[in-house]
Every structure is written in C-alpha cells, then in structure tokens.
Image 1: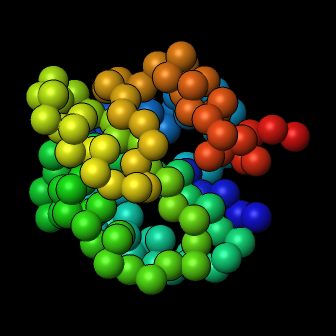
Image 2: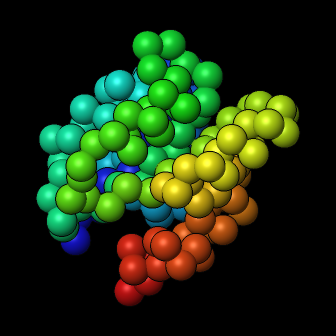
Length: 134
C-alpha cells in the first residue's frame, strides 16, 4: 500500500504550518500540499491504483474549487484508490459540520490550526489503523 497525505488549503502559511505538524507527529514523511481542491483532485487521479490510500486534510473555503466542490467531484470519479477526508477548517458554522456528514468519505471534522491531539485522534481512527500501526 502506498500512503498519500494531502493538505489542501489556500493559505500558504497554514499549509507550511500543517505540513510541519504532520511531519513532527509522524503522519507522513512527504505530505503533499495544494492550494485548492482542483489541484488535489488531479493528484489523486494521477495516483489512482488499488494500492493507493489517500488521507486528505481539506479546508472548506478556497478559490478555484472549494472543499464541497472537491467532495462532489471526488464522488463523481470512479477511483480504485481509497480516499478518506478529514475536514480542517476555521469555520464555526454548525451547518458546515452537518454538511460534512453527508459525504461518506469524510470521517472527521477538525478545527484549524491542527494540533497534536487532533492528529493523534486521526491516527487512532479504524479507517487509518492499517497505515499507522506497524
């Protein structure tokens, strides 16, 4: 299995911060970062074998393709790869949490900035257990 960690956010400072945090918390040696959902979707389509597992840390509000548009486009794709999404947002709107629950690929909803505690929770999730247990 080939594990891909994708960080998708239009804020370059958040991208840099989150990349450092996930590396420090040993969630991936080479997390990929993208400024919008379109770039991330193109990456997933290029890495789309049955051996690929993608964990996407996804912001909601972005230009070009926002988080909801990304999730809709992802659902429309016929993918061989496993793709799991954790929303990572500064939104305090309860409707965003409710909307995220409509997507089968979304398994968690985290508040920015990422914290070691929230990453530890992700690592313990049964969906990702095969990646982080050795």
